Length: 490
Ligand code: ARG
Image (cartoon, rainbow, N blue to C red; front, top):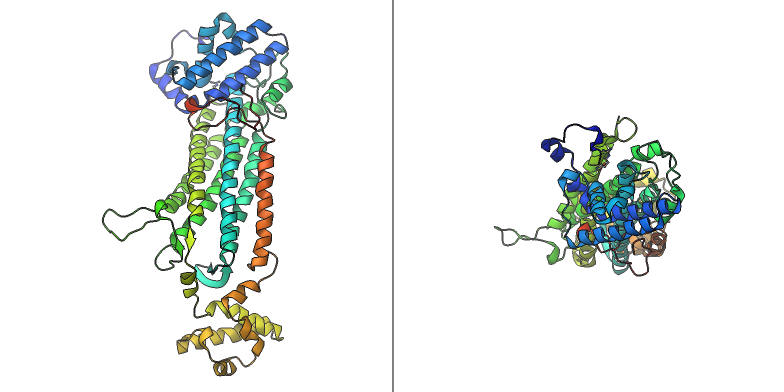
């Protein structure tokens, strides 16, 4: 496609080293969608005859079908998905095929193709995240009245509602959802027409191409357009923090399901056994979720390092951007496939969760706050309760085992109205500060959470899908119109 200037053909090693088919062949359906829009625009502005547009359209459909059926085997000699498709188009359409690349460079083409592809995948991701968040909401509803230990420093701190615990993870994921939409908005501008870097002398209508691809607008600066990958960084940033959040949930599962804690029960179908020790039930799924988070963080750093110090505008280094992107998309979709069903069948052993708190030492803050309500300054109340706990430990007793006489002896400042409140239930019920663990507060968080998920479902519909259903393997992708969602392909 660029041989005119050269007097030698490309060395075979160079061909292997520079080709990107192993990365970009999956982008074929999105590349074709971009080419269709470009050809139609060229027709609208008079650079192609209507009959030429028709021939290009029909031939691109044939190429699309050949790729979908697996009949089209890309040729590494042709470097990438873009040149393979154009070359096949020219085979099919004849000389008119050679007109498709009018006013276009692979630099604006690849940016467009990736953005279209990424938009579809991020819409899938948003849907997956909604599913994950919905599972947490329903767990919170089911477990609202279950009391579990709340930990700081992984030491028992205060009793909490299990519903509150699930909503904590929900709340972290709700911020991830915001960041995902930030990435979606960041990619949602059309690069086509930026050309290699400076635009074109031809009368291209960038607004037309943009709107026909479902982009609200074309990008604003052609140099920046072929240079930047901010939208990918935004996606990787979303993914990195999402993976970090998943890893923390996963770590909780590993810890809480171990024999020493033992109150969280993971479904057998999501655990594996040991080849040697017959008693083992290992939390491999959470461990792998935890483990994969490292790679997702690494791929954010990988892209940032690729971009750092890169001269303006397009540089071939940018071809490597797809490696980490595809890998992270797959990691995230893997996590989103496994976590919701795992959550759907996770259980809590109520009795065991309480058993760990039987001594009532987790109620020490409640005792100190009782003293505060009696007018004792908090620091003093803290010290007095601390001495009480120390004495309990010395006598080998829990707070809940003390007789009224012992209370009178050890904490004379306490009054009788402390005792009805000295239970795990009351400790949870009475924490009614906004955002606190009382079931009433958690219900408020859940109602807001339902609203967030419903809002995301609506918000998703405002973005145009190019190819549905989006599949990690483009050769299996069907370009059919999905029911109810906007799609560009016919
Ligand atoms: N395969 C290339 C990529 O993925 C396409 C752009 C190549 N442009 C160029 N000037 N060599 O980035």
